[in-house]
Image (cartoon, rainbow, N blue to C red; front, top):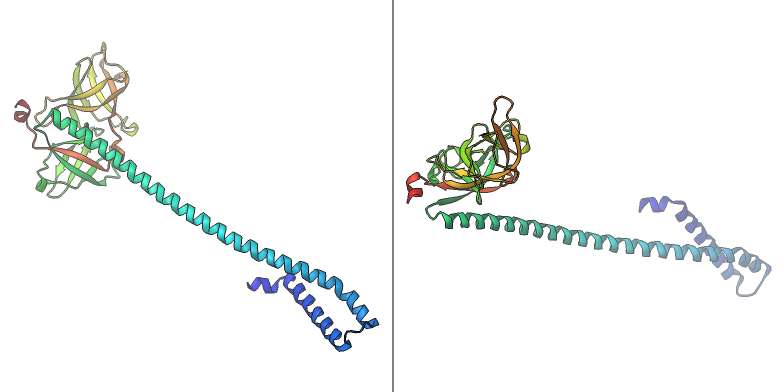
Length: 282
């Protein structure tokens, strides 16, 4: 507003208005009779009237445009707010859909293994220094979570409880080199073990190691737990084969396994508690 008063346009308007006032004053003094002076004044002020009219129209237009811009901006703000609300609803929907799928997978596994005891847990922290996506969950000893318990996401194995504390637990993922579990290919029945590997963990992969060079395991094969360990049940899916390669240090072959879910993005999981070989035998 201050810039408006200092502008050349505003000064021009003021000048024209002053001239108009002077003209009106002279006309009042001379009366309504046509004189040489009034003729001269009329000649001078006729263009002034035209300029004033144009300026007035311009002011009205500017004012109208300013009002229109304000309404336009308000409408944009309203639409942006609606878009934001819809995006939030979409995120909530996707999260709910994902969660429902996880519960569905866990329920199917539970139906196949009625003795399994599941405990839902939330991921409350991650070890930023760990390249193997070690994470912390909000369940611990008071919830019957103990060291070695399997940690699942739906029907997929994602790790084991490394250390359980009273109210929380630290979980080692299947990408960790310290992790190892007996496993087999559900098609060929070839048996070996899956472990993490520092070189391929950055790709989100783990290894199905010590395979025969004549292995029949192929791309897309599904690898599951073999259930040899007393703390790990059979037929928990670990992932699918993405690549078959020969070891450089020996004559064996290994398969690169892509986990069934992205461990780096987990926000919840299930802990398989109270499992033992006797419950499986029953």
